[in-house]
Image 1 (cartoon, rainbow, N blue to C red):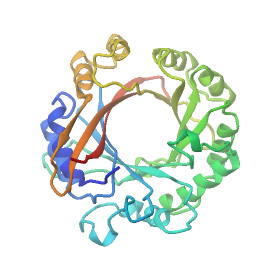
Image 2: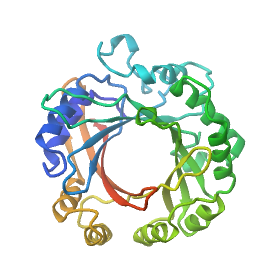
Image 3: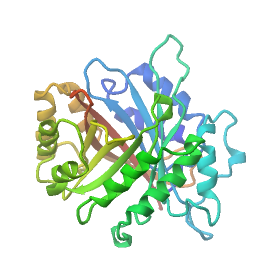
Length: 348
């Protein structure tokens, strides 16, 4: 997949997003923020809140390991990046990950996220420091390359990746909890991503696992997840019968935290798929989304070909949708729309 200038991508994609999801003030911040970023990213996501009164969007970009060879994917040298790129907090991780024969060679990709603030009168961007979630499954996303889960290896790879992000030793209790979560996964279950969000005042591990649908609730019991089991079962039921695997997000500190999230990532070319419409109806009926925002999220899906600045070929941008439903420690439910986009060159 090509790496493209983030600002050009954002400018091409924003016309497809309703202002109910990304307001004009947030759009200006997105453009200003992405103008600073280097062209090291491929997939991206606008993370939008479904709550009617919340005007906030976060920005996620994916970086995948370069492909060797003359015709392989390459990343631009750090010396060519904009001077004010703002990625300093993640550079120790990035440089280690990029080095030949390094201790993070088994990390195939990672996601960089910024929380974009919307408060204040100034239109200039005020994003959070960037933070990372990185893949601890060396075969991902190619199922044919999947290796047996070895919990100690998951723990070790997570520790090696987290150290340069935190700049200090990683909490051993949280890493041991990660190992136990991996150890108690059912057959076909995978720990996919691990990260930390230090600027939010937490050193807990953010963990994303792929769990067979029929085993999710049993796995939560096996790892002694202390949250609201009835609400977890309700969210799980909303996913329906459309998936073999569920994406389950947990936080780990000295113990497993009671927060939880699950995703609804049904592939579809547009928002008219009956499963999408039924799922959105649930969110509306439960007060987690307005009818206007849910319709805007469904309208996002599609694809179009663009002639972007600084690219040698036409670029097709596929617009995809995931929805994440989160359960907080105090039992509050919230939902977010993940407006994803995936570029590919069109050779004519």
